[in-house]
Length: 350
Image (cartoon, rainbow, N blue to C red; front, top):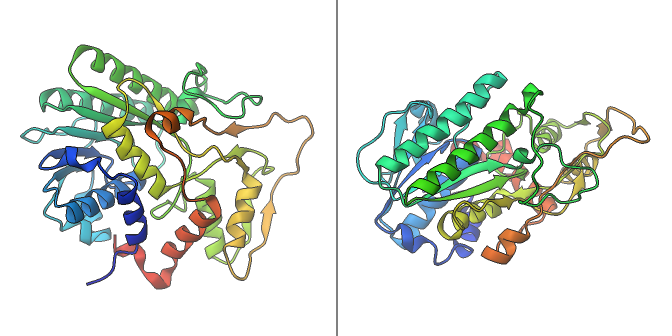
């Protein structure tokens, strides 16, 4: 029997969610987006806790393509405590029975989509999931939102808090993702106000870890891809934008904690407060390889350019729920690269 390559991370998750899982004992949970970047970690940790704690819980996972997921991740697909429902989040057919918990992490597929489809999928999908929760006696629902709801972070604001009332530019079509998440949060707030449903909101920022797409819009994933090819690691732009990254095992701890212990209609920023420039991120990635690849920054720094920040303030999560990052960025990058190395063949073992 193969050892799960994420075993150490899954033990980390279980250790820092102790006491939460009893609420799920013998219960059912419905998960959208369960086969994506976040979803794979949610399913792995659910299965790990189910096995080790004997919870006898079950999960139903909505996915557009169950066969594709089964081909890539046969071990999870074959589990008896996981069932997969084929459908689109906007109009999926409801399975029968009661689901005490729902995690809504579904947005769009990994392929690029037009802004109007992005917005519609987020809003219509959330409306459908809320209808599902109302009809299936759901007690607690976690909505995976985004820091994009704040719009462009003011350059003088080092860390954006949950009470910041900024917003995306409604006349900028690429803002469809952030505007969609804002509208979806409003739908959640209205649903929570009219029915006995606790709706928890996690506003997620930037992350790194196994299952990270390497050819999407995630800069750190692109840097890891470049490094695995031997370099150079290519930084588009001048490398000055500031970001922060939370390792996926820590993220998973945060998401389960917010679902079970978070306050309803009370959003939590989810991420790290340790800001680093994109150039520094590229350098951290480069240092994780031997031999070390060259880092190339495409544009020079222009004096007087407004600083671009995307960094959360996470005091609320720390003070109310005791949540904090436990795995630093260099370690997170090294763990991700190790998992991705072709010789380990981890990608097919999930």
